[in-house]
Amino acid sequence: MPATNAVLHDKRYSADGIFCEPPKKLETAAAPVEQNSQSQWNTNDYHWEERDVTDFARQAISDRLLNDRTIWSDANGNLLEIVNVELSGDAASNVRKGKRILTYALRLKVTCEGRRNGARLRGVFSSDEFCHDDEVREVVVNLATEPMESDAGVEVNRAMKAHEMFARVLKKKALPRVEGGCTWLRDHLEEHRG
Image (cartoon, rainbow, N blue to C red; front, side, top):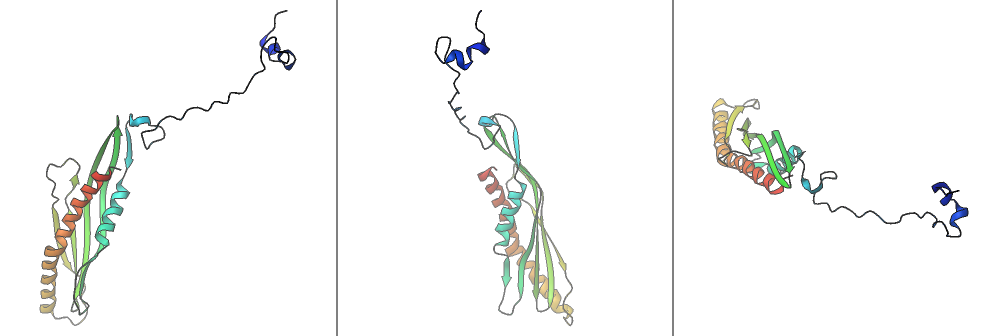
């Protein structure tokens, strides 16, 4: 009667080595696949993959502008500072066939508030949308000012002079900082590419 696999692998038949050696467990480890990608599944970044980097951009521009929030101050405790930075839009790092592609369409809104001799003012800088494929690198930033409730007893003349001074300071010192922040953000995103 011919031997079958069940019989050949039975310990009785393999013990003397006539039919076959007993089955052995393979101990060769699979060689690790060389990974040139950040992705677990997208080996060598061949397939299209997109990662959202909007939060990275928000955190970077907030850290940059809020790190030194004071725009102007004097010895009398008068102050003009950045109080809020908002970045809206989308930013993504894409990869296809090993090439990294950065895409973004963002708007920046920076709010400044100040006080001088009882008069208070709020200035809001709003950028036009700036994108990864804009031909012009400069970002257009618009300024809107609005008086806030002033402390009681402030003369109108004095409050108006304070508002005019704040508007000049915003245009002279804060506007270049916000425009520079937009340019810096573009360069920062392109440098890191997600």
